[in-house]
Length: 245
Length: 312
Image 1 (cartoon, rainbow over the protein chains, first blue to last red):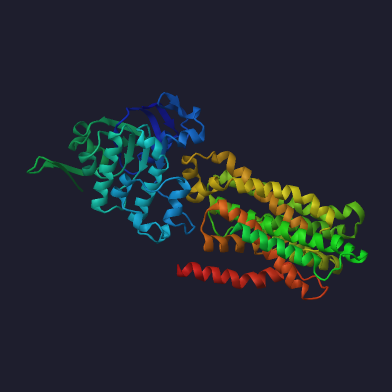
Image 2 (image 1 turned 180 degrees about the vertical axis):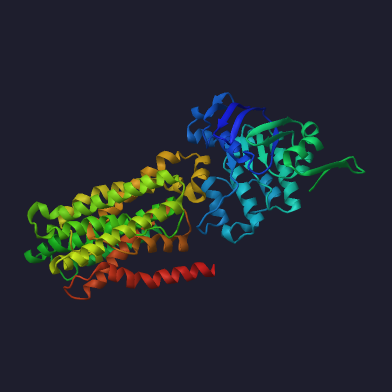
């Protein structure tokens, strides 16, 4: 279980309270600059809040040693760049030395074909898939035993449609194993289709915390995103969310 | 591979040390102890220190172009050495003759602290910021040295020019043996940090996520890197290019794993300088400026490495 109380960080986070039980997959949504990345970094223990505390499985993040924390939580940053021509294989083995790519990850991300290529010769979406794989392999033992906290900052950015869905299915599977997932992105329909919960942020505050049914409605979204939002139901009773200006 | 490098290094060292000597003759024994061993020792220590220091800096600053010369550590040492030489330090004898190495060592440390202070203000993860600050410091140091040139008398000028081009003939056996242990200790420690350095390829935050205490690690490694450069500079003056060339070439040929790159850099750096010594032996007794040779030998190798990378 992940709990945060009264998180404050200058003007970026204001009085955030949240609880995330085991086995849940949360979508972190909100406009640019709402504080999504900052919140993820605070939850990962990379940034210290000025006020407030984060507890992971009952222990304050500050009480974990860096290696102990690395064994139970991972964070995929939004911008991961290197000036060196690392191969995909190096990129994976440096962070997860003892493993081949787990079959579950390979099915969703399909990166075995790139192993020998330098990372920076891959396309943007392919690089993103490698980074997702790296981030997850880093604490694969904890993930397989269902006690990992997985934080991802815009992992679907640049992925083609098939891989967006495969990724979401993978994340659902990981949540079903008992892991906690917080994933930020800008895809309202993916948020509608997959996962358990929506955290909606605006100007450093957590303005909504609830199920898709509660949070993803026209009034709330229109107000938060300053954009026209229309929700319709198709012939197979799927809710489709459309945006317009 | 590491074993092969080690063997080449030992073979070259022994070859250079005993070349043409008859070890049962008194005079040849003296040449061995007073001239050859300090020369070989300097070459190994300086080459290894510079290469390892650069390999560390390149990963930490996230820039394959970083080297102690570029980010101003060397120029701090050069500036202090220049001041020392122009104040007439070169004419001092006896124990005071170690003033020059000491001064340049202090210069290297001083500029490192300056760079580190600036780096802290910019945020430790800001590789580009640190490099720009280093270039500023380097330029400033170069400017002051140019002024000193302008104002210096003929003899000091010659001493200074010679020092700035680097020479492996400066250190005596005492200085080489004094620096042996610290250099081995520092390089040994750096080599054990290979895993942590591997995590730094995607920046400080990625390393922190992987379990590294970046705030403690970064200043510690910067200091190690500066101490190595400081020692190298005090042994042999300012030597260009080894630092940039060696890790770059090794990464290009054998991949990026720092658990391999660091020891391999140490040995390849040593081998390169031993080869410089060997080549300069062809000029008879003349002490050829080292940077002249590292640049002419290293330039083509570097170019090859760059072209190979571009083809990839």
